[in-house]
Image 1 (cartoon, rainbow, N blue to C red):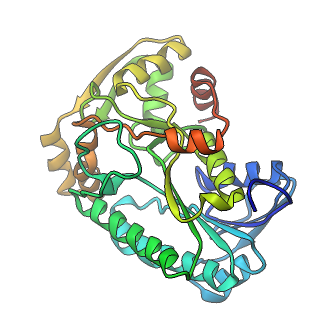
Image 2 (tube, helix red, strand yellow):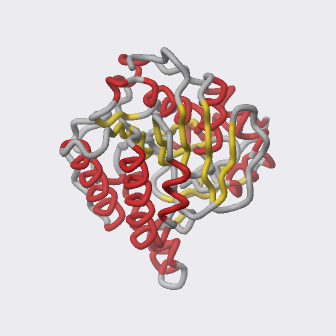
Length: 313
């Protein structure tokens, strides 16, 4: 299929900050949508069926993917510091279920495997140079997945997103609920890494819509795509833009790297954050021109995206 010629039967694995808006977009585009999550069913959405169960249970995963044309893997455990143990079995379970169902797979991924880019913006051909354990993990999983495609075991399209902001996006590096609350009231906000280097940020709904579009196009499979980037300037300037939309003024302060390392001795999640904070110490902006040129995915005007994030988070 080139483009959307008929409704697709789709399965979304995970119902978090990307999975839920993805399900909404797929249903709005006329597709048949099932969503698998471990918790109770999510909100009632026309055209969306909720499935409850553990992806790591093979019969549950098989049932969720049975009959699907496309499976979207958006699973992303909140326990950031445990990704080394949680991600490999979850991803492999998703890939196996899609393969056994004869479905194509669209995988949501991040950019950790890039390491410290030698130039910015960097494109999809930038070779992986991970410089932290989580980067090496993502590089290994990405290579394993694309090898499944090369062997003909599974048709794969991989969409890589930069750091998120958006409604309900609690598991984000910068635009967390506590930072957004500080922006709304004005005052001091604290960030990890240098706020004055260029850094790419993506709006969650743009990421979800782009994934939906990848799943509709046969020519999207067999390669990696950088998903749309909403902001390519400095973190400080984007926070100031948020404050201007909120009608407040803020001071941006960096959490000292030494303090982050010390707190990481007793808080594993902060140790994991410290490992990845290098992404804000170098210019880290992906080039999203390939997906824009190939499919022209709709994107949200920046101020509208900011307003929706401030209102709904």
